[in-house]
Amino acid sequence: MNLDPTQPDTAPRHEAGDLPVIEERELPPGRHQFHKEHLMSQIHDDRLATATATASAPGKRNPFLRKVFLLPAATALAGALAVGVLVLTPGDPSGTRDDRATGPALTTRIGAVDAKGAPQLLDRISLAAAEANAPQGRAGQYVYIETRGANTHVRTDGDVRSLVSDPLQTRQSWRSPDGRDGWLIDGGTGPEGITLSGLDEQGNVPKPHLGAPSHDYLAALPTDPDALLRKIYEETEGQGNGPDQQAFTTIGDLLIESWPSPRLSAALYRAAAKIPGVVMVDSATDAIGRKGVAIARLDETGGQRTEWIFDSKTFTFLGERTVQVEGAGGDGGLIKPGTVVSTNAIVVRAFVDDMKVTP
Image 1 (cartoon, helix red, strand yellow):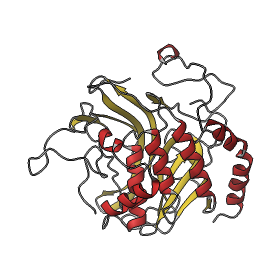
Image 2 (cartoon, one colour; image 1 turned 120 degrees about the vertical axis):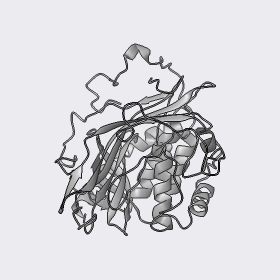
Image 3 (cartoon, helix red, strand yellow; image 1 turned 90 degrees about the horizontal axis):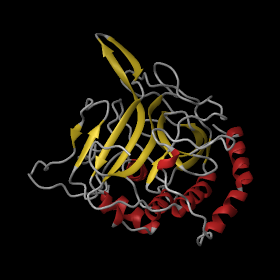
């Protein structure tokens, strides 16, 4: 994705000749409505300006899911607009960086919220997601997801405690569509990575579920937002910091850790719009500096707000971050408001022919 229309499109580690040719065709059903939504962008901008002026341990999870090392722990987010390979370019050459995380312990400007703007924004995001082409893989291929991210945590050195943030690290995961085979390489696994295959504690093949979905499992989920949200509430009952927060977290994990179809992505966004406490944030920046608008929810237990970051014009998902916005967290209250607890950016989603193979 190129955020500056005056510059040519670029993609990391990809040459233009490797990308499929896009053929001209008639607009599919619904596309006219999508363009109509873009004509309403001024209304969206007005809402952002108004928001700025008026601002103010559950069940075991699959090791495939990201681990956030901090106190208290935070989990998060996000969706995919997919073709067959999704590549997002770093940086925002035209945007300001006033809220980009900086410093030894990552901090940021806390964005202003607009509760009334969230349903409209999620409606646009879901519409854009539904218009994307479905990812298509061949038999025997693996789902490859590459992200970059960093976490903040309290470090203890003798009697001295300090707040530190990890350097930005690349995370690569490979997963078979049925979820039985996979590989993970990130900062905690070493350069060779670890297998995601194997049996559970009872010696059985793990069954995919909402907390550890496979690509095939996602294909069987309902795409009616009400039915989908009802399933999420039922299957996560008793987990996390309350049912609403856990529902928001579960949707975020489904979106960022896997590759839902366009229909399911759209349903997840519409389901999120029905969760109490979901708001729009006027400005947020992902781990690699791409600036956008966010959908977020405050976890009142710890005062942390998880933000799903989208490009404000194309509504493409960029990444997520969790920010301390109220009170102080961590051992000794070192995590002050404005601290970026975790930040992640999606770089590539693709089908590849084998584990440890990149697009």
